[in-house]
Amino acid sequence: MKLPDALRKAQGLGLDLVEVAPTATPPVCKIVALGKFRYDLSKHDKDKKPSGAKLKEIKFRVNIDDHDYLTKIRHGEEFLDKGNKVRVQLQFRGREMAHQEFGMQLMQKVRDDLSGMSNVEMEPKITGRNVTMTLSPLPVSRRKRRFAPVKATETPDSINGTQS
Image 1 (cartoon, rainbow, N blue to C red):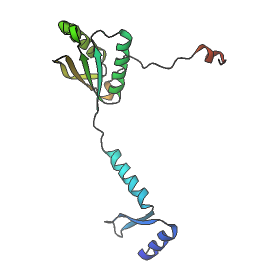
Image 2 (cartoon, one colour; image 1 turned 180 degrees about the horizontal axis):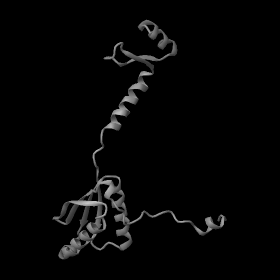
Image 3 (cartoon, helix red, strand yellow; image 1 turned 90 degrees about the horizontal axis):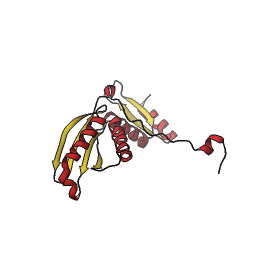
Image 4 (cartoon, rainbow, N blue to C red; image 1 turned 60 degrees about the vertical axis):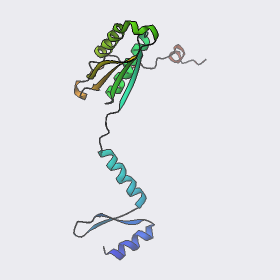
């Protein structure tokens, strides 16, 4: 199609004539809405870029309850499953500093519990009142979750079909 004919047709439809392949012989053009075309191109380019691994953080205290510990470990597994790195931070307060060995035991327990999902990138390191360790996710094929995510439980009323 000749250029003036193509321009007339595009204006008749209320759209734009966009050159798609300028190096082709003859050059290839499309009749599209320019704004939408640019948006689609930017989305396509953004999808191609690999999103870098984000760093998520989980904070612990030395005397954490078992249930709270499990919840935080599940969150850690979730982060690792999505391909994010996890920084595990343990905070000491007051007299807890006198027994730093308990903190190191807890960090060892976290490392062991998340070993099916991660590698230790940075060993536990004491800095002031904190102990920090960084975990990076294993390749997808080698990941094994140990702590299944909690599913919503049914109430007795929903089972019987009655409402309160």
